[in-house]
Image 1: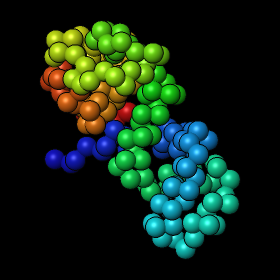
Image 2 (image 1 turned 90 degrees about the vertical axis):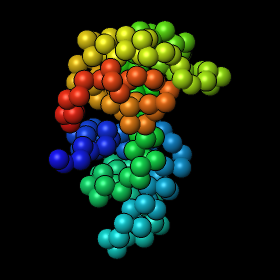
Image 3 (image 1 turned 120 degrees about the vertical axis):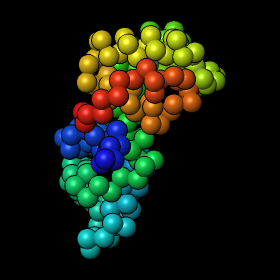
Image 4 (image 1 turned 90 degrees about the horizontal axis):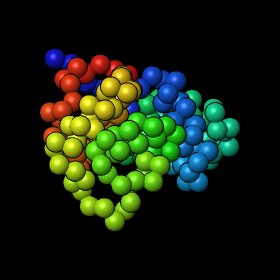
Length: 163
């Protein structure tokens, strides 16, 4: 059986490009970090040259060469679900009963954030309201943050389709 792509790689190339472009615009150190990752991938460009490229060109090359590290992928998915499109996370947190501010969980809260019954209720709400995008969001939580959401792996339908 073929291994499922990571939640980040399951996104379309266009969505990944949007995320990388947004990260480059939002995070001060992203341009340097992504330039270094591209230079390390090979291709003949030095990091200093890559730093001079326009954001859209740097983002396209970064996505084209799949230069993202696992940590980059996680940060890009957080950017997607917390900053750019928090609606799914808000649906989940509201249904689970977790305090949040526009989808951002207060740092003082300690995981796990809810019991398995509440998590199952949140998963059902997300799937009912957000369909395939909701499935992708929940799969992201299972892959990267399951200890915070007990039972989510069993509450999530086993259909592993790319979003």
